[in-house]
Length: 138
Image 1 (cartoon, helix red, strand yellow):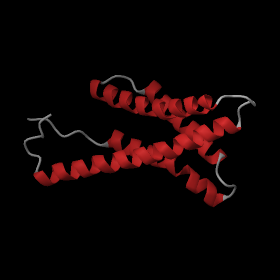
Image 2: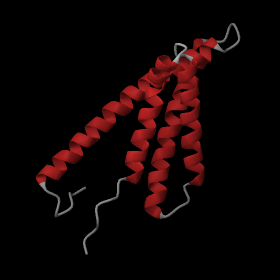
Image 3: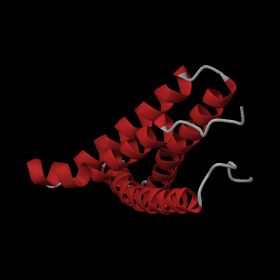
Image 4: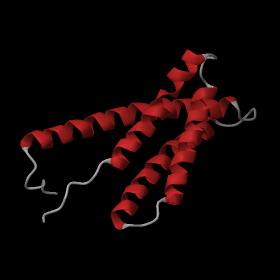
C-alpha cells in the first residue's frame, strides 16, 4: 500500500509509532485478560474439568472481540450493517470484564487494576473505530 501523496515522513513515522503502541497495549491487555478468563473458568468449573476448557474459553473470549472489531471495520468501509458485530464486541468485552472483576482482590483498587485490560481494549477499539481514513485524491 502506497502512502497518500500528501503524507509527510513525520506523519508516516507517527502512524508507525501508533501502530506499535496499539499492538503492544493490545497484546498485553489480551494476555492479562486471557489469564483472568482462564483462571475464572477453571475456578468455576465442576471438579474433574480439564485445564483445556479454561484455555478454550480464554482463546474464544479473546478472539471473538478481535474478529468483531475487524468485521466492524470492514463493514464500515463497505457500508454494511455493524449491529451484530458491535453486539458481539460489547458482549465479549463484558464477559472479559466480568472475569477480570471475578478474579480481582475484593475492593476498589483490586477491581480497578483487574479491569485495566478490558478498559484498554475498549479504549483501543474506540480509537481504531473513530479514526477517520485519509481523504482520497480529489
